[in-house]
Length: 282
Figure 1 (cartoon, rainbow, N blue to C red):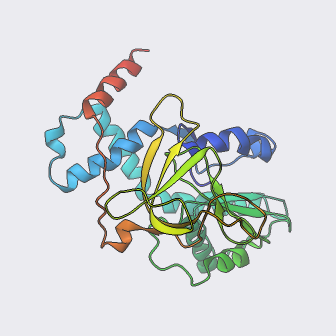
Figure 2 (cartoon, rainbow, N blue to C red):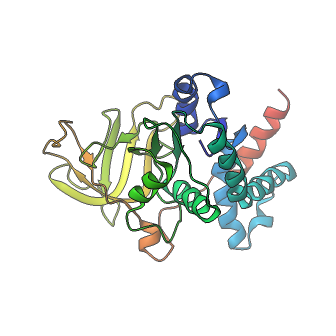
């Protein structure tokens, strides 16, 4: 998995619970970075970037420790592609001829394949290996026309298992054989119109995806995403799954609206500084 070893993000929690046992133990579970990522810091980092873009970062009065941690996170992000190249090249040789499960976003998989092709490096995993992906292209502007076929051909796997989800919600929607994403019953999905009013939960509707996470116990489970999706509410899917399903065509409002999206959020810097001070005393 081209990410961190652990953390309190939904996906990292899931990988820790299921990925390690599925790999046959921690020694067979490989991640790009061995450490744990702070969900508080990563959540705040985006808001800090927004303040910096407006020239207001100095006005926030952030603790020096927070700025240092944020700068380290940015620096790691800048060298991520180089780190990933070296990391995956090593794993290709170590697991040649063996069965593997490869995880990552579509963007990561495409970049890795392109780098490997450019270097003349081709994986040779066992035939029953597969890829699990989610999270979209993550800013990749020039994907292949059929990126799944491109990735399957490079990695030599038979299929790609995909999910639709987000770190703010614990439930994920697996993709079925008919390419629809099926929303689990513990995620109460809502589509919003341009005025952020709920669209009818009937027929086929297109709007902004929002949800209430019924698994959340220690925090408010409501979340409004930046995704434009179509949900089919009524008829059952041809795959046999009953319940609402998301159309495979998913877009980001920020990309549709020239890089801007009216939905934004802000955190309490003071609360975060106080939290970090408390943790340092434990």
